[in-house]
Image (cartoon, rainbow over all chains, first blue to last red; front, side):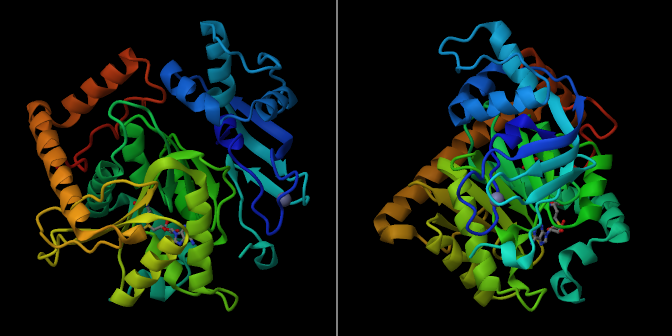
Length: 124
Length: 289
Ligand SMILES: C[S@@+](CC[C@H](N)C(=O)[O-])C[C@H]1O[C@@H](n2cnc3c(N)ncnc32)[C@H](O)[C@@H]1O
Ligand SMILES: [Zn+2]
């Protein structure tokens, strides 16, 4: 599974790819929703790590419109629940993640992204 | 018997047959669980907080399951597709990545609250392709790992070095990448129980001490003085003693009962990702210290 919490932390790691290497763009996605219990304390601690615009864009690209454009300063329970849903319950099972910087495609199959690089793509 | 690393590259050695054999072996299950529990202890995460962790070389999820039981959210990566497939079958909760750790990570700075790696990094000392340079791969690995950990935090590696040279190669690569920390050797005088942990730290912290031994090889960063080290050891000892006390209370309800209770507690507190009760819940392999 690739959850958006993980996707929001993941940049392209191809050698010398430092521009537009985040966020990786999903395509041909097969999405599965798996419900889980929310932990608001964890979410609150995690918030500063999030790249909010990337999260909102990615969620929308997968058809979820519940997140506001700007990261709220005071969170209602409803907003926290929406954040929980986007971060923890949306699992990408199949598809591709493409780097806008270098064009590298990381395919996802069976919920597992293939992050292996060709030797010439490996940084030193 | 020769060491697995010398037989074949990891993704070949851990093929379908070996992946299943490895995961179903009850002795391996119990050892991996014990070492993971010890690594978690050495990670010294804040009590009762769900953390976002990385399991480096997660394999079939024997180590990750322990993270599930503790209620953490985690990401696992491994180079062997067959091992990851078994992890999927076992329905571990972590996000799994097919990844060669020697190629480095792309996680954004400060992503993880900590990392563990159980019985993995000795593999990095083998050159499985002519283009592989172990030193280069170790450096790439530690540098990108260091960047992806938050400050302060720790990464704990249980590993099986084949020589002191290997230990030196690993620790010096970690230091060059900016880590502090040191080696913790549990039961140094027992040939069977002896286990080596590399405890790496981002930011300045105390170095923990090995179980049942005075011996500790510290590869301190930034020339931490001997006095300071002694003080750190004392503090760690005190902390451990105190932990021992509080742990005794829990001991009365052991095994399945205890796990179920803890899970219930987590659920009540609204902890995220508490594993479902299944036939795997609190099976015998879970060993307490
Ligand atoms: C002994 S198993 C341990 C698995 C798991 N941590 C456990 O405790 O059961 C070692 C694992 O390291 C993985 N490994 C070896 N070299 C690796 C590399 N370069 N990148 C990622 N994983 C690697 C192997 O595929 C294997 O799954
Ligand atoms: Zn790229």
